[in-house]
Amino acid sequence: MCGVSVNVGSIRGMNMRTTRAAPRVRPGDGANEGKWIMVDIRPSQSVFRLYQRVVWGFCVVTVTLTAIVVTKILIGHGFLNSNEPLSSEIIPGNHRFNNFVLGVHILSAIPPLVIGPWSFVRRLLRTALHRWLGWIYVGMIFISSVTGFALAAVNTYGIFARLGFGMLAIVWFSTTYMALITARRRRYREHRDWMIRSYMITLAVVTVRVLPAPEHLTRAEWYPLMTWLCWVPNIILAEIYVRATTFRGRLKARFARGA
Image (tube, rainbow, N blue to C red; front, top):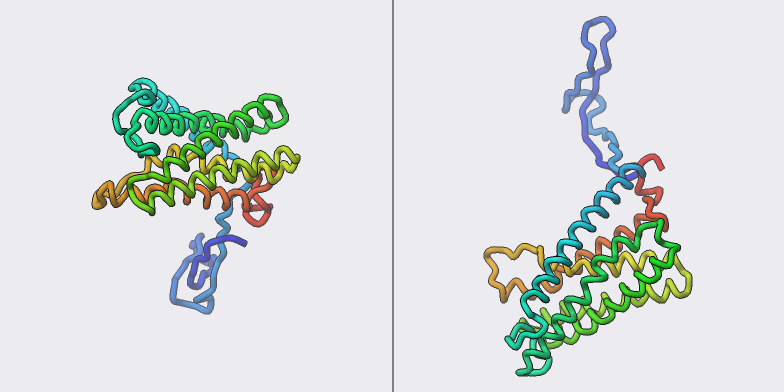
């Protein structure tokens, strides 16, 4: 049983011949010294379900705001058609092309970011809408991950940053591809697990922008670390969630109180 152990001393029972109505706890005294009381801290299924709904709602609001802000910046400021050196150079000197590739990479990540939470709504799972949203999700991620890999290969912050964003693109493409294959083969339990992994990688679009840079680090020192921190914790959390929950999103028995 998962729990927290609390070390207590002897606990004297109520003395029926006196007016004392509560037990007294006196650590360090009595024969029960050193014994442990197990406190179950596992959530119940109902509490866990509430957590899921709160996280889902927070996620919808966060990704929608992120999508609006990023799209406004890219389109409103003429980023896609700019001739300024704003991107890593896939083709040296061709700033317009390089900026266009970066713009495509970012914009194609927006639809999956917004679609993702709705892909897990149970009422939509067997509908045509779910399938169409799924195809958009997969197609846009394939575009974004491929262009992201190309940009990672010429990243100007060194080999560590190139590996960070390069691995992000590979893992993102791979988890999404596995989600597609398992859905096509009607292996829906595996499809659900791969979609969770894929979407947690998709959320790197958000985490890459909200990670606080330590004040004692310069941008040149922080940026390579950020290329890993924006997605590695996400995939770890995804794996924990996948292993702790059932196909229907309930906690597995050993992780739930009263199960």
